[in-house]
Image (spheres, rainbow, N blue to C red):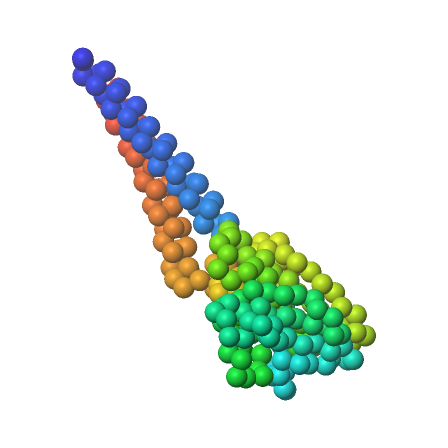
Length: 235
């Protein structure tokens, strides 16, 4: 093999590596840009929600609440009180709405804290209109059942006593429902992305973008050197 052929082969290899590095850098930068944009959208969404709505403490953290004439009651099924598994019952207007199989519950308290891993009450106020909404948020996936995506259900009660029910999984919830289930889900979920709420997420994102830039510029530089070397050899 002659010197010119060797040079041509070397150029092709260098150009191939250059293209690979450049394309890899572009793909990584697109991924990084996507998560960066989604994170910025998440921050804007969270800020807008907090400006418009406020969650206020429920004065009496009792498992029985009455909101504008609507009675809500959460309690443990009697026959499960001494069992390893518990069945939590939710009643609205004295009618059973849900029976959820859960881990053992502390029955020595009337506080909703005993049920907080499965069901929670929340009192939300619209800062602009002062309208109040009572929220019941729950995880309906039975304890111990292995599923890819857990099921959630919410009930919202307005000042007129109108009850709205919704069921969903993560990724299919509304902007309001994203806020309502926080505290029940082990992980803090966002509406657009979970990234801002994950430990070390920003460091990982910056490293990803840095690696993408390094790959991109390395590919471009390698390609330039290959062309310059070939041009010099041709002269």
